[in-house]
Amino acid sequence: MPETNTKKGLLGGLLNLPNDDPKKTLFIAILLCLICSVMVSTAAVYLRPIQDDNKKDDIKKNILAVTGMSNQAGTVDEIFSQFEVKLVDLSTGNYADNNIDPVSYDQRAASADPQMSINIDDKDDIASIGRRANYAPVYILKEGDAIKQVVLPVHGYGLWSTLYGFLALEGDFNTVRGLRFYEQAETPGLGGEVDNPKWRAQWAGKKIFDADGNVEIRVIRGHVEPNTANAEYKVDGLSGATLTSNGVTNLLQFWLGDQGFGPYLKKMHSELGK
Image 1 (cartoon, rainbow, N blue to C red):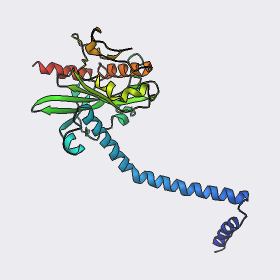
Image 2: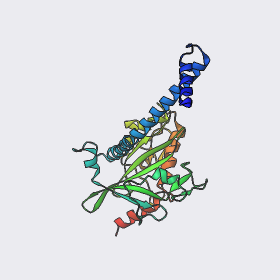
Image 3: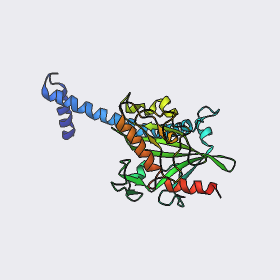
C-alpha cells in the first residue's frame, strides 16, 4: 500500500504541476510516445496479413498485365489460376525437385539467405544484385499441352533503385511478349519512364537470342529506326536516363544469360525441336 500511494503521489504530483513546467512537459511527451508506439505496433501486426495479401495480389495483376490477360472476364485469382507455377533450379535449368512450394516461395527472401543463394562474382554481376537465389519461379501458360507463354521474374539496379519486374516470353522461348516493372524508384519523367505504356509497348515481338544463342536484347541510346541494324533485338533508350536504360539492359542480359534463366530457356527451346 505505501508503494502504491507513493506512485499515485508521484503521478498526481506531476499532473498537478503547471503546464509549462519542464518535468510535466517531459512526462507528457514520454507518455504520448509510449501510447503512439503501442498503437503503431498493434496496427502493424494487424495490417501485416492484409499487406501481404495485397502484395501477392499485385504480383498476380502484373503477371496478367505483362501477358496481355488483364482484360479477361473473371477475378484476378480465377484468371491467374490458368498459370502453372514451377521452380527452376538456376544452376541446371531443370525444374526443382524439392519440397518447396513454388506458389509461396519468396525469391527475394531466399536471395538474402546464404543457405538458399549464391554470391555473384563482380565480373558476372552486371545487374548489381550481389546474391542470386538458387531457385526462381516461372509462370507457365499452356494451350493444351503446348506452352503458350512463360513469365520470368527479373530484377537489377538502375540509377537509384533496384527494378523488380516480369518478362513474358512467347512459347518459342525467344520472342518477348512484354516487360513490366512493378517496383522501382527511378527519377520521375526520366528513368521512371520504364512505366510509360508507350515504352513498354516497344518490347512486344523483340528477340532475345541470336542464331548462335547469344543474348542480344538491349536498350540502345536513341531510337530504333526501321533501318537500324538488328532492330529486332533493340528498344528505344529512355531520354535523359542513360544509366536506367543501361540498367534494364544489364538486368535482362544477366537473367537471360548463364547466371540466370539462360540454361532453362535453352533447354526448353531445344525440346521444341524434339
